[in-house]
Amino acid sequence: MPRRTDDIVIEVKGLTNSFGDQVIHQQLDLEVRRGEILGVVGGSGTGKSVLMRSIIGLQTPDEGEITVFGEPTIGRDPTEATNIRKRWGILFQGGALFSTLTVAENVQVPLREFYPDLDQALLDEIASYKVVMTGLDASAGPKFPSELSGGMKKRAGLARALALDPELLFLDEPTAGLDPIGAAAFDELTRGLQRTLGLTVFLITHDLDTLYAICDRVAVIADQKVIAVGTIDELLALDHPWIQEYFNGPRGRAALAGKRDIEGEIKRRPTAASLAATNEADAEQGDDAVATDAVKTDSGTR
Ligand SMILES: Nc1ncnc2c1ncn2[C@@H]1O[C@H](COP(=O)(O)OP(=O)(O)OP(=O)(O)O)[C@@H](O)[C@H]1O
Image (cartoon, rainbow, N blue to C red; front, side, top):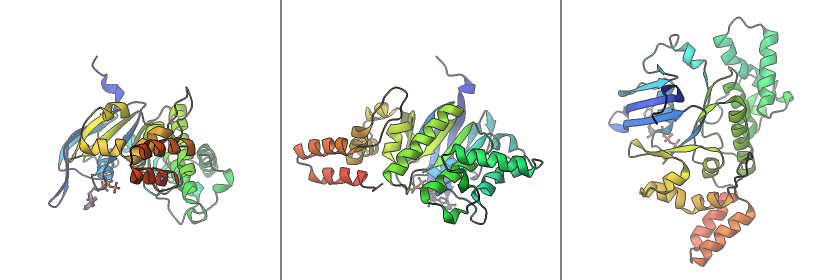
């Protein structure tokens, strides 16, 4: 049955991006469906962030068409695109908080930009609500980013991304740099918010555990294109070498061994027991290097 156009939140057609002689994307196509968490993976430098920047209008491509909520985003004057920009929130790599502003003031930045007439009392109220919504204690509001841990900074960045009650959330490597427990908690937060708020999420990640735990579909970027998009099971059925290496390599198998899918509950990251099972299977195959790698995943190497 044909998919209704309003089920597609982001549509990218024929996207070509280059920097000088370096071609990043060539005729790349992608659709993101309403209400899904779409994971975007690919080797380092394959252009995941450039794709995100193209979608949000920060990068002008050489060619191609991009629509978000049915409206084109390429080459739009920022004021003209205000109505679309209001409907999304972005968590850039590392949080990208303004270091001279407190957490609450950071959250208020988009509110001030899009709703300049809001009074301070309301700004404060909305900011404290968003801070708590991301699992931070209310006492984090008056703190500066330098006073926060890495995980707290990500949550503060997420609070800012949620400031305008977006329908669409862009997350660029949200769990990078977090320890496995912090990363699992962030996954859980993302999934919980996505379900509660009905968000569509475009999530760039290298984190296999995140893919298994919360992504509905995964898009793979290689050879300057999206070479495949589907559930992990669908991707595993393909025989592209990068896909096989990525999902069926030692870390992929460790992530798979640790996933747990209980109705209504988040899938979990690898447990010591599941990793031991993976290692045992590898040892049986005489693959010691693989076993060592799998353990590294659990000990924080991400
Ligand atoms: N403004 C720019 N000027 C020149 N080259 C750029 C620019 N932005 C990105 N690139 C290049 O484009 C390529 C893709 O970069 P991008 O950041 O999108 O990769 P990525 O897939 O997100 O990588 P990673 O997983 O390492 O974050 C890289 O080779 C990068 O050096």
